[in-house]
Image (spheres, rainbow, N blue to C red):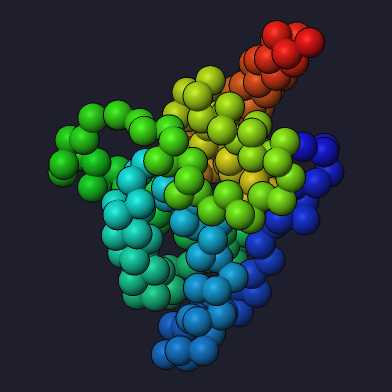
Length: 188
């Protein structure tokens, strides 16, 4: 994936939508939903690893967003606020159900809206990513590369120091490059 390529995926949200939604504007809520559904789904699915759980959590997330618009504080990145809500709902669900971290990679990657990723090489890299890095590192890469988020925003969402996010990101990308080179050498 090109270094600057992920910038085009960044979701631009007019923060005024939250005030409109708070006042009962259904069209503003629809606009927010359509702008953010795909990246929010990818984020929730990366945690839940189940299409059904991801859909349930996402539905609850949008219900919470609609009911909590009055709590939103303009800081330049509404997506980070929305993702925090989704992450908290996921954690509550996980604690309640005490799910084990069992991953069916083939099922998961097929659910992750791969049709949004145009290049075959990018799809293969994404599949490799899920197999080679930890869940936490995978979330960081998804948020940065696929969703176009800045490392500081990711750190805020995951409640980690920026240095830790940067370190995990670079370590994981190095690991992925190593595996890609190894795979290429085996093919030659």
